[in-house]
Amino acid sequence: MTTNSTLQPELIQRFHNVIEELGPEQLKQMLQDMHTIRAFEERAEQLYSLGKVHGTMHLSIGQEATAVGAANALQDGDYLLNHHRGHGHCLAWGSDVNRMMAEFTGKETGFCRGRGGSMHIADVDANNLGANGIVAGGVPISTGVGLSIKMRKTSQVCMVIFGDGAANEGALHEALNMASIWDLPVIFLCENNQYAMSMPMPKAFNIEKISDRAAGYGIPGETVDGNEVLAVYEAVKKAADRARRGEGPSLIESVTYRYKGHSKSDKQAYRTRDEVNDWMENRDPIKRFGALLTTAGITSEAEATGMRDVALGIIDRSVEFSDNSPTPDVAGLMEGVYA
Image (cartoon, rainbow, N blue to C red; front, side, top):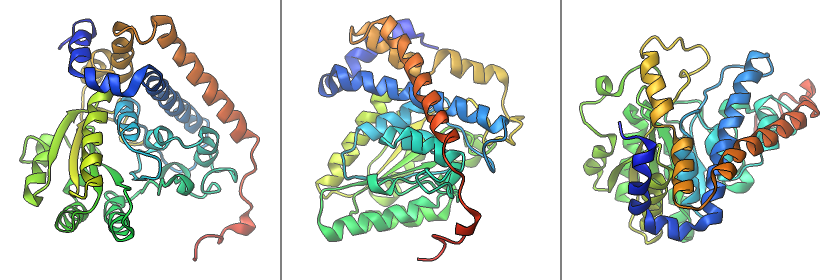
């Protein structure tokens, strides 16, 4: 395993153009956003243990680079659809953390007035069309959004994020085919954390890379290190630029790893503690990006470390906002069920 100390100069050289393009302030904000996402997820787990979260939930601790890299590669006005492990995607998209926390805990001030909860958070005003508890459920919707963009002749793109488990759902193949033959401006981003629910990827696929499937639809496919935020940014930016030129969809596989179970009921009997510790100690996306920025002289070690405290303060205030928010009135149970 390449250590962080030996990896950073190589990464700085590899991503020189991206670093120049983004600039110091955006790079530092990306690191701050990664810290904020992790702090949100850690607090989410605590709130679940305290009984303040209804139903189950799916944490994305360890996957922050994919969310932040992808979101920063798109523009205001673009569309997002994601899956049930989507808290980080929403926060990276710029959704208000207070309303996120309120929705997560089922409060009236949440984005969906507390009706969506952990698995169905949406911020429609920001073109975040929401997460989906159905595996691959958001994928066909993204094709519809892409068709809408094309018919309206705008320069927008739609990014749909799904897991490796969804990559074996028929809905994905139908959507890829339709998006391909109609040259729709859709970015299919597979967030491959390598286990779906509990099935190791090599047992579920007879190919080395999920992105290899792009060839079957005549579109570009690329696999990137999903724990390297600039690699994700670079790949999604290239796919977005292609889509805006009217050249159709792309399939990107972002290989990452979740530190926690599939959901809160997961006993994680399918992997070893040593494996998890290896990813946490040697491949952590926040540690890696923080080290890159300090090595490049973009931020000091103290500033990078201090971002953790800033994130904790942001989450503390969001919990306070949620605690002071009203719960939905039972009398309004049927509101929003029918259009």
